Amino acid sequence: MHRDIQLDNWTAICSIDEIVPNTGVAALLNGEQVAIFHLADHADQVLAIGNYDPNSGAAVISRGLVGSVGERIVVASPIYKHHFDLSTGECLEEPAHSVPAYRARVEAGKVWVCA
Image (cartoon, rainbow, N blue to C red; front, side, top):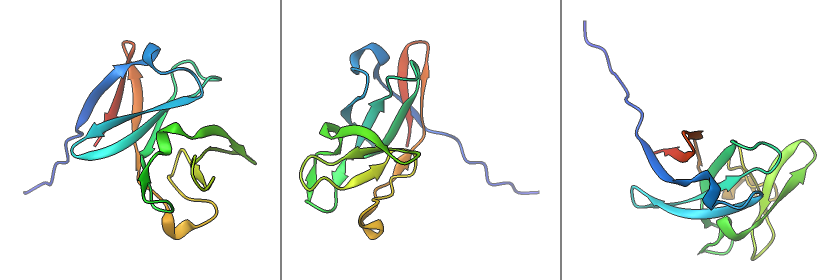
């Protein structure tokens, strides 16, 4: 019997201490820019979405402001202030302009993102 096995491709990005709580950093992961955010209320929680803002055409998501809209944890892009859900990558104002979301975790003090 043939089985398709998908292996996870996790990459260590940085130490969790290198990301100030409630801010983001950008990383290059397999040729794609990823924005990684460290949430202040959760010492070891990180979320990752695409860093390229399709509304402005610039790679700036990692420099946005972290906050919430209702129950959703979001980042506001620094250019046009569109809100991106940090769990799903959905753009709240323009869902057609959503960005990819990536699995992220903290293990042994390091931030890991899955391509």
